[in-house]
Length: 151
Image (cartoon, rainbow, N blue to C red; front, side, top):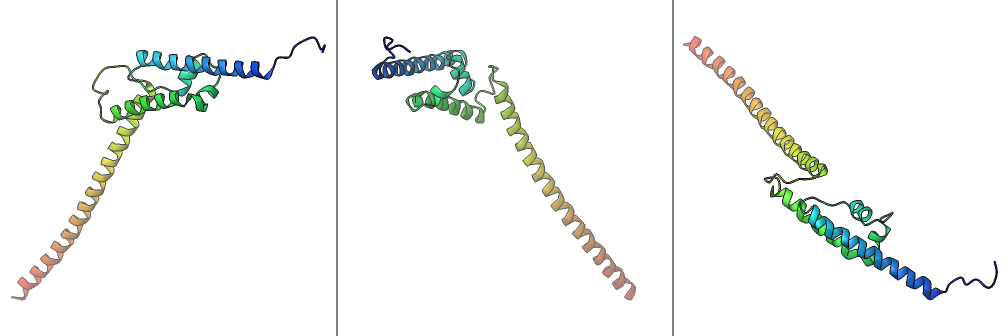
């Protein structure tokens, strides 16, 4: 290595780092705005954001200076999930992701399973009560029969 070649300086490295941070943040925010227009009623994945912004990993999205972007994504997803729980979007024929459909169907299946278990529990209770009452009726019939014979 010859001494005539400059290796750069610390200020240049810091400037490059700041430019990269700024460009990544700008690209991520543009992707969020694009998804607001393209998919307003579907939850967004983090990978969808950073890969759509042209980044190779989620490192920029996980960085503290991009916390506002993560917060925007989480807020959007929370609003969408609340809407699904109130069946707001299920009444419309808008496009939803398969993941959201699966989540909704899984929750519906859990509710139906709970209702079935509750119904089976009450059926078992009433059958046990019926069996006890039948046994009591048999005992009372035997007593009545004995009393009729003793007269």
